[in-house]
Length: 277
Length: 298
Image (cartoon, rainbow over all chains, first blue to last red):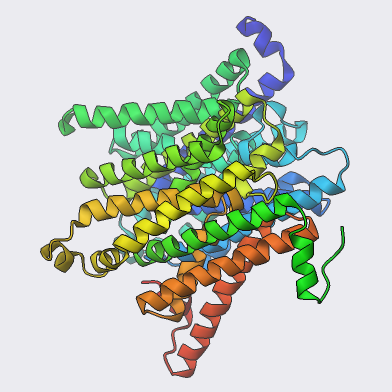
């Protein structure tokens, strides 16, 4: 099939538009996630997103309401209770394993309550369902994706300052706490968005890998942000095209492309002298 | 199916009346023994994240094994051990900061889970099959799986019995251990391989995503209660056995996923132990509200 025929299909157009918006947001926010070394916050939020979306379905709410609600609530809780510190990984890991355990319970209850459901709803939450987006997901996903990008760009300057040198930023009167809270909400929204594109388990592929590539390529923050967003965008679009022609899961191609870019950038870093960066 | 009663003997008879449940209990017991023992060292050495990573790398291994028609345990062992050796090998020349490391780990995790999904689609596997590997199951543990689990558990426990003392020594005081002629580097790679073996068989019961429930939570709870190595090790194994038996039994009687019960039981136990410890610390005047939850970890 030609490109024209591909773009004539509704679900492909939806996937390109929504996936593109989500990818830009994930790349931008992901850049700060890696910069601030909060990679595992996004992992934890991914687990919460799984349980939240199934809990939302179980409560008779919309899947979107469950994902966004639970992610934002937990992100704010993390911001309130958890400082950054060493040695928390056992506590956090145990908590989030339990959160996933509850998600499994919800899944099991939901699939046995709905006679028609075969459990594929859980798979699409875990691994994404970019080719099967509902009309409401397309609208909400695109708008929130663009809004997230806009807000991130708006606060990018102070956020960079706070991330790189929190003490000096505080001394200069930058509202550190408010910015950190806002950032966590941005991460939560982006995770909730990305769950629809690549799924709760593969969030790293869209939020962390492109940012890691960008940081390998350039130490300059603005260039890095742009690269990160572009790489995420390219991974999603190329992944969609590949999955259209080869008909394996799109989320596999997206994570594989991002990972390939990461390997190449890592190799380039080793081979090329540091002066060229 | 009859429900449970207050007659324990009758309950156990009910539980074990089917062959698949006998298999689940035998495999679960073997898993709990190794996971509890290895988990103590995992927490002691602060390598819980490595356990998390190994288990997720195991997912494509299991799916790939299904794809080429061999027992999933083989795929799990192969991928987990390879990943363990990879971590050990890279560990030598990773000089980048924590940031680059966690980004690298995250990228590998996302890719490996995506790969697992691809393998499942290639096999045209059912949703239930994926859930089994992700969240564990008590169904479908074959006689062959039990035999394999037995061999792996024996290997792992044997290795821990031989190297356990040296491992504690090398963990608590690596410099002195090195000076006394313990090969700390080889020991830590060897330990990662043991963790990989534990992960590979534990995944059968609690799944890739809930590995913390059996491999980390029992060890963490035990270390909260006592600092003495032998006692903590025994406690960790006992807790792990208790979580597994309780979880499998509850799953059987309620027809809900076993992963939910094991992770909940282990979480509740961990929180309860920490709460008791925190309360007694406050009573002793050691008042640290904010730090109380996380402080005891370091």
